[in-house]
Length: 278
Image 1 (cartoon, one colour):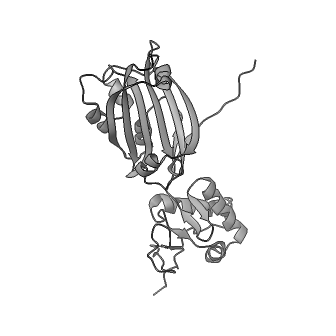
Image 2 (tube, helix red, strand yellow):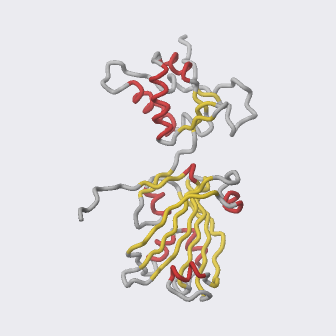
């Protein structure tokens, strides 16, 4: 009986430190990263990167799995070390693996890329084939501070609705979302129940409120202790921030959003074109 090809992944990782050193996760077929076709015009490094990418997307390689080092991979695949290095660099740039000193190359949770558009995160996750869910943390009427009042076009101290939610994608906490709305927009409904079932924009559309345009500011900072706890992330983890002010066709401000996304699981994508000549 032919021997099964040796696997290239072990289960030693920060997520599973209890496993014995050298314990290997069994591969279900050929060496992960192969086979490579030397008769193809496609570069070998690209073939290896795509094979590894396919294994990650199929779940054969999971977050926390560690790839063999360059020497081992090059021997298993019968290619040069620079070829393997180039393949791993490609996966690193795509956010599918990270290199950790003293650990090696580790598969990470795939980042959710979001094309900036006038849509909600809930809608974007569904469009990307993800499974979104929402934990409504609080819904209450508060006095607007100066920043929120300026955004909503009301006086500081006036009442507004404050909504705080935790957005989850495929079972993993992704974003802490805080929204401020005119106090009358969600009257006569149970906001917590509505927002647990749908995104904010869909909830507004069901009430006949359409978002016409919005202005966004994107930034980055360290997560607060509260955010880190909600996102199940280490203290001082990096978060991407987005502040959005959205209006309807009549020019009325509908919402001011202040969101924090865990950077290791999320990124924004922007399509650029040539600048207009002046």
